[in-house]
Image (cartoon, rainbow, N blue to C red; front, side):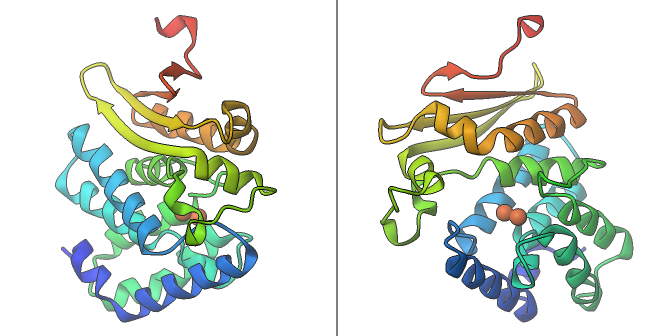
Length: 224
Ligand SMILES: [Fe+2]
Ligand SMILES: [Fe+2]
């Protein structure tokens, strides 16, 4: 099986990630380079691993995380489906099995909250990995634009972790924010992402708990 390590060394993928990140830099978006895709790769694969899924799905989630944003090299709009189409010939050339390629393509093509639909374990893990990446280190050059709500929210996030409670089937996203932004601002810009995380966790037969500064944000009485 083709591994994440081989995909990381693939020249075409390396160039696509760089081009997408550069494009988003000019658009004023947060960091989408190796730090972001590395986080998503690691988080998506560790969620499936912690829940006891097969080594194949764990590796496919790791690869999907690494390649999920290549479509930004074409256009931000629809970058999920665009990336999926770009990846097909590149992944074929690596010698990857077609069934494995399709797992990655479906996940990548559905990772955007605007149009994504969760239909597989790899896709669910990718969405959780991607939508949970909010942290001060994503603000470019460590200099937030204080008039920009995305910069404000990200820069206020001091700690960010996703943990899995396999026994109780809970995927927990815990954040620590300082006073330079607020929970309200986080919810204002990331509500659709939170809803997508809830759907992705449900696909994995888990609940999704968002905890900010020790306070559960989306708990419901029926879960107690
Ligand atoms: Fe994306
Ligand atoms: Fe992403």
